[in-house]
Image 1 (tube, rainbow, N blue to C red):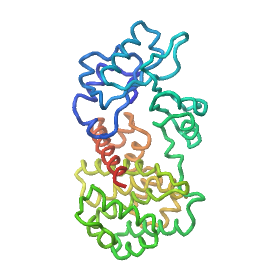
Image 2 (cartoon, rainbow, N blue to C red; image 1 turned 180 degrees about the vertical axis):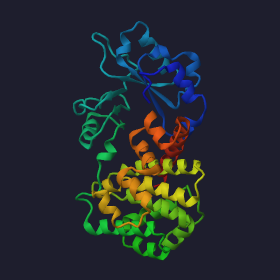
Image 3 (cartoon, one colour; image 1 turned 60 degrees about the horizontal axis):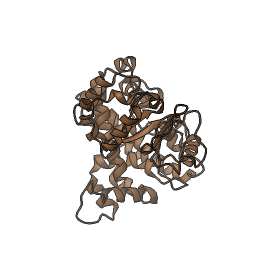
Image 4 (cartoon, rainbow, N blue to C red; image 1 turned 120 degrees about the vertical axis):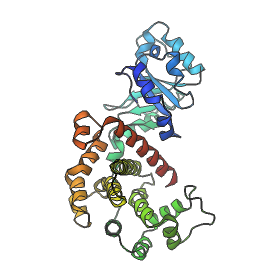
Length: 360
């Protein structure tokens, strides 16, 4: 969270004055980027629990008198402190401040350059798969940016038969098909079957006996939840390199947020389901490596859902655009959402996406 350009005395109470934010992102921690440690007054620090907050402070602040002592005091109080950017000329790195955060949009440090420096280190604005790999080689272990959107599963690691099975399953889910038909298709996809059985046997469902069959899994989840989870589990299929699919949390985030906004409108459950589906399906083109128009040609979706996915039209489309770009006044107004409602929907969606990531 970048507070460098904002009014810290106003922003911190607004964001952390209630427990909603930290509860929503638990067990993850919150990284706050600051330009000056002197902004952190004792009343503000009372709102920021040391076990959940990481400060990324501009290294240039060390040129100011007393800044090094202020940062050391934060570290002594239990806060984790990262230095952001290069050190000022002639200023040595304080012994207690070894972790770094760095804007890496235009490049990454040399390979292994951070491995000898105690971390974890955060690479920011990592917007491509190549930059992610460079940052990883440098020694970063925390990353932020749009790099998940650069990871496409529909390449050499996914053959034509696998893609056809996914499209067939999507069509069954979209048309409210019989559970037996879904079960038959699941049996043809070992990876998806594995993730489904792993899910229903996770702590989230607290079953007393192991679930080993498709019919049992469908019974435990229920028809509505089965469809929702399968829409997301499509993203959990293993990649050719064995790495997790980074599109999964993004799809879960969009699905959860669009569903919550629809629910706040007072819509019926069926409309909430379609809003969830819109968010979940919004990354299918990247998952499958296919144009969205070609994917939708095989899916019996309602016209307003197809318009949202293809052209970002209608209420769902405008809200999906907000989820993709982030809010500004014009987009919020076009979507008919106020800032407070958007914030609450974000908290809900992040909490949901984190739970998905832990259970899948």
